[in-house]
Image 1 (cartoon, rainbow, N blue to C red):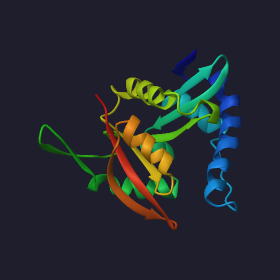
Image 2: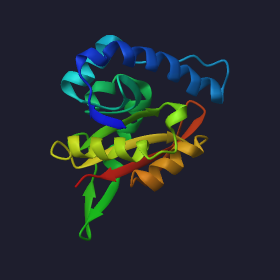
Image 3: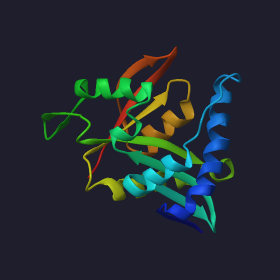
Length: 184
């Protein structure tokens, strides 16, 4: 039976290894010459202590995780700087009244990862639901970006994570959807 919980510091070594493995797998699927850098042990420790990492476990093995963070965590990276610049132009509504999205009322969502043998079993939706429960008292929105060429992720987020497309943008010769999830 799959269990879900917030990550703790003892999970860092396993998360580092998973990050190393899946970041490059994702990038090479789009361009074999690309190499990525996963989150470091220090960054994962910060995320666990100050932000959110929700795990899916099969026994002691992490078979999935999702991350949410305050914008300042990723703010030095160029892609996130671009998204942060776009936030004030994003708008949603509540009860017919327009609401602006900003760094104070939203969290950066992602990445989310699930081991291939476990995909298609509802783990994605459960990870997102657990993240929503963990963050709903801290923010009003989750904001995610998904590469246009990642149709599987786009489908999962729009069908199973209740996310809506709020913008579309280009960055370094790649196009991205910007998605929003209202928190309860």
